[in-house]
Length: 204
Image (cartoon, rainbow, N blue to C red; front, top):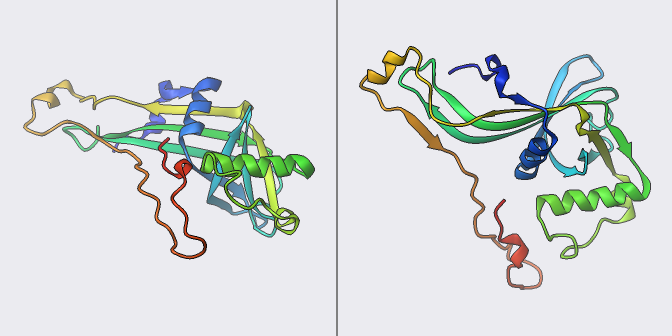
């Protein structure tokens, strides 16, 4: 498959595009250099918050004890691009890469950030679950990373055959769409029997 990194024209640093991609995602891959000098990438939940993105984790985790710059990547896969040649096959996607040194969020701002994170992952969830206790909050570290160094890459559309004569080959060309579907919520069957809340039936 073609290497998307060859296509610099797909890059963008438009803030609104960055925000739209972040609003549509759920998982970020966070890259760090650990204490031994080795690169580590960890999938994590995140939440956009104004001109920054929030990340949280255990205060004891390797990632949250890291100092220095990090890299946060969010990628949405929209389709498999099927060309008539293997070389020109690709993917349709939207991605954001954010680099910088995160700020540790503390105090009342940390409490607010944790609610923002919860409500982003499941909109409407805050107010429909027990809030975090002080011991739980103290076990959680929150980072805020500015979007100042955010860039995007996007690919859309059908395959581009090169050479153009490949269009005459007896092979199918086009796009296989990829979509994330949220299913019907499934009760754990314990505790107080309640109907499924409306806020759990949603799609981004």
